[in-house]
Amino acid sequence: MQIRVNSQMIEIFAGATVKDVLRKYSREEWKRVRSGENTVRDGQGHEVGLDGELGGGEELFIKPRAAAEPRS
Image (spheres, rainbow, N blue to C red):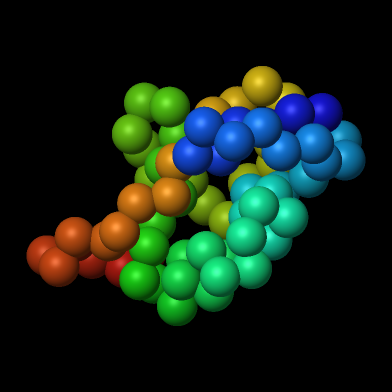
């Protein structure tokens, strides 16, 4: 299946989670998200959980966490 991350198409296995896609997209970005420096958001701007399963066709965006934004 295909997932778009920051406008780059990523080919990943069916049933992959957000963290699986991030690891394939960029180890450096994965580290930033895991540390809380960045967040992952869906096409509507909602923060998504790293264990969330993807179905294909989703679009994800990696964004810096705002200073006042709480960690989840």
